[in-house]
Amino acid sequence: MGKENDESRTSSDAERRGLRRLMLKLPAIRGRLQTIGEKSEPLRSLCEAYEDASSTLDRLRSAAGDEDRAMIHEYEIVCAEIEADVIKYCLERGVP
Image (cartoon, rainbow, N blue to C red; front, side, top):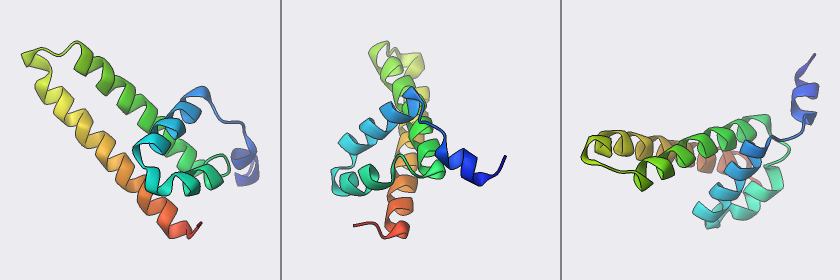
């Protein structure tokens, strides 16, 4: 199975949720995300990772105690890093 099969696979629910979250979080590149979001395996992987990290962050924040502050901060950093990777990826692709 080659790369062509990987790129043609359907998106998972986590990938779609992550893409929607990123589109809300990054309105300046929403159009680019929409254009390449379903077609790009690397971007779909980033969307899935973003969904996992941001949903964990949401859960930690809703049950936040003093002992969770370090973990919350760590997940905030992870989410910000994924957002930066997504922005870089979209800008490198030059999609309007």
